[in-house]
Image (tube, rainbow, N blue to C red; front, side, top):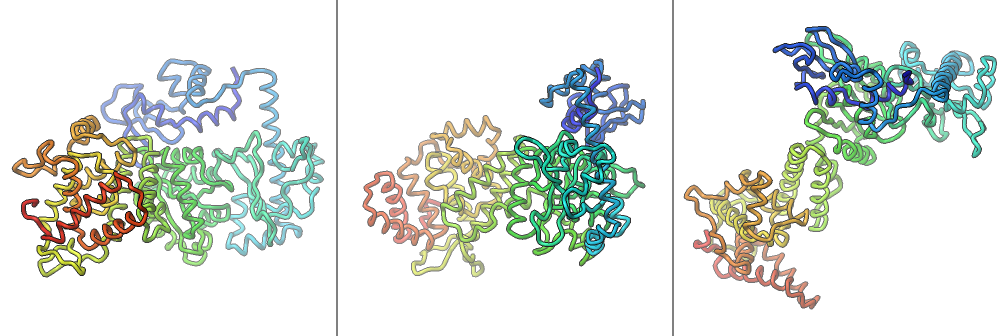
Length: 611
């Protein structure tokens, strides 16, 4: 069975070879690639290497791509291996019919049409008619060598020029329209050339074959950049400008100790070309759209941690958030993303020309892991948030982490994001902490002073008891949620808080201590309770504090830690309750517990029996 080579290329691109081989061979990371013990001959020292699109064993010499691996590993013939991989990739194998053969010939004819257009436009750039385009490119700092290497050209002003130039070769307007070089009317008939009066940029697939063009207009016309339409050869979702050159550069053999260039995703054609000229040969760009999941997969086939570079303004940050949310469902322990935000008003092209390659290299070297910048991206613009804004942000942080399919990795991201959340908004909620003179950083000055000062040891014991109260009465967590976020907990107490808040946010908090402990045990979180037990094993006995008393005691402990803030908040809520006159019983019970806790503070402050 003869199968279209374009279909096979698409199948290989959609099938990560490391996933297929990794199901049968234990692989370990080796630089940008993977290695393991060869499955085709017995060996104890790994000599079997897996690259982004092929494998090779330096022991027995076996070599091939993902299709040949399935053939050799499972004893299947070529059609059977293709059928198996196609089914896994959700693709249908084209049948060897006359229609299929004609379709293959048609695709090849489209490649010929594009190559003919490329010859016309690249030659026109150096003719008088293309002088404006050449001056523009040279003015942007490109050398003639770079212009030639990327095949840049000029689509002459005035529609009809390309039709006339290709007619002597027997190329019709209908063929040009099918290749993406002409617009079509509602009936699919050619109605005008797509590219004219523009600098042209050939777009090539991962193997370097010409599949479409992009064009940039000179002056103030719109759109500034224009890409060819979807065709049998060209899918914007699956291609990246410059990928053929970047892929070759990243995979090229190099002397020992010389590292491969980073794979860097920038915004546009000129950024890619300027970076390549400056030595950053791993630069690529999406084709006029935000990064797609398909493009993410392509990036990871080349580099396990590509750098996504965005403008530092609001639009750039929004694009970074969108890219992160696209990439999170695809993250895995073996591949990730790095983020780089440019200085305001700069792009990679201008940065190279004004600051030089050394500065840009240092800038890219400082790209941050996605995990460390995700909070800043999601919380951008959130200043002095109220309870509703904080709750919404925390919900978004946990929702974003939940996008990651790998449970262990998702848990790490959730913990990282919530740690940043607690640290950021604890600081804002507490204001300037005081220290020195033997006073706790928890004690805040105000009109009403404690008769006792809470020292650091007492503060930690209060926090321990507060968490134990919530373990005994988990149904209280939703009520105390906002205040619980504000607690400046010791490191070993924080994991339990994270679990309680996650359960509350998901609306699945157990209603009893026994149910909570059972959930913690079932989900491997039982260890979060251990730090709450004193060395002597003392804690709160089951049922020791009824829920009404537990609510009051919890708020009393909280008031001891944040006295002035607590009193102001209770007074405001009491005044609001009296004005609204809702008669809500549950609301009154919550307020009553806080009023009683406030009175205990006013009467005597710290009760040693509670500590």
